[in-house]
Image (tube, rainbow, N blue to C red; front, side, top):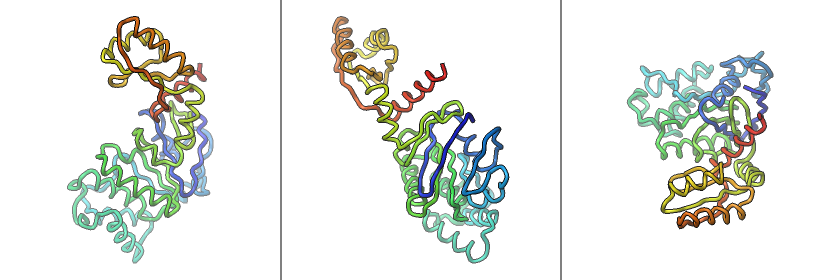
Length: 293
């Protein structure tokens, strides 16, 4: 980690977005007390992670991307073991297990082993184990990796309920661009640094104000168009059959691109577009790279 400063509030979902190796998992493990920080201080629910690890473990839930489940134990037994590890016993344990089986749609599978379940149901079971003790803070490390779109949507509905209805503070890492809309705030991570933080739409607007919108070119001869345009616009990239780049001078670039293609006999449609979240991420990382130079 490199000078990361981050606060997650109750009833808030904060997402960490970045490529593999960006530091998302490392940050979450440090906040859970599973990996010591090399410098600095982390506080979770009022407890110092370095000095009060036991108290921290009592108020957090952690779901790893591997869905850490006991393969030789049934769904119900996995929940009972998770409850016991967090000191939830007696009538409260039985009540929490019954409530989670019902809420997460696992009642019909309570006697089955995790290996017999579809990935989406194993994901729900892992979440149930992480929240059986009703934590105040929930850490989710790429929880939807390898899960089908419908199961991902259902999972996010559950996370929204935990945060916005029960007041749980949620920190979740992901590499799916389409999931950022589920987050109240979003942090872009790159090489162990937090290079952008804010509401998703605010980050997009800031990137567009700084570097302009996208210029998009559609042409039947899109490969030839890309080769030509790349010579004039170094940031141009090929997205499917479109050539796109961020432009601080969209009007000027549009006319210039039209002239370049016309001279080569290539008919094309050219338009400006607002930044997508993927465009925003690339723009923020590019800006961070300039700051390092």
